Length: 433
Ligand code: SF4
Image (tube, rainbow, N blue to C red; front, side):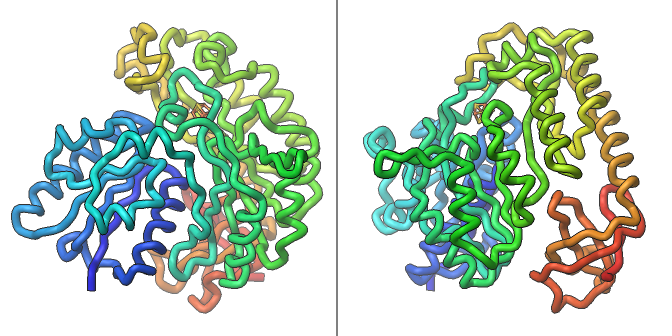
């Protein structure tokens, strides 16, 4: 018997792709090792979005180099860092046996048999290949990639360079996977793409866009209770998509719309393709037409050229829109991107100070929104036993909020109606009704 150990970093696309790789390995007779120390094959599926992400992976490679002194195994690196550094990764870390780019992940099992190292021809020839099944073992929630890559070239972002141009998966292949997930009892799917709402597939001279795909999915599936999608670009949210979300209970009332900044000057330097006022109109329209919708966002603080005035515009936008939640981070130059050549004169200490101001504001807004919801009855999908209290369960609402409540573990994987009775930190406390 051969044993594998896979570490996955970064986005949900990486997680979905790791699941597909695991399915491949299992079908070839591999089993998951009890720990990395007993594995014959170790794979690190990497992220390259920030330098800190890559630093962490270098640390893991160092750890495995050390482990190789006492244990014989194959060490492979795939994902965006492998795609970015190519053979350079192996030159810097000879303990790495295999480097596999994002466009060759589906051939990993084959590579494993032949121990073929990075091959540039395979990469430049390759179009991204969508896999047929991305479900983790015994899972009732699944991530389903529907498009891949990005054409937007935001000046700070490495994604178009390591994931390539946009390519959409065929509707047949998507529906086939979703039907299989239904048969396996999956209750919730998240449709994935770097720019999910720019999905565009041409079939028999007809263009199927993202709204068209969602309509098809709603028609062709029945037992998938909740359908989510991520990531949506604010410039690609058409009217018919808003109407569809508003009118269908199976589409979760939650959208993640990364605004990144509140200043037009900075949005322009980031090449985001919309203005502050465009974003305001979109958020207002969505809140009016989809009552109660949760809008979450990403905020990138300390971008080159950001003044205190630009920061104030961002704070003002946050207070006006009242995002339910925000992923906040401060800018670090990323080699290979356009912004890498921008003069970055804001010191890290100052960036951190600005970031902390933003975090404080968002925490307050999120808390007020959540406190207002105490007393409501909500539907949750039960995920697991609570880590803090073995007699409680943890579930999530359609807005992706966490709720703990007393209950039996037999309820895991089912939808339950819960009354929200209190808020502790970021998590609601509730009871089954
Ligand atoms: S839209 Fe911009 S931030 Fe998002 S993946 Fe594309 S280039 Fe990166």
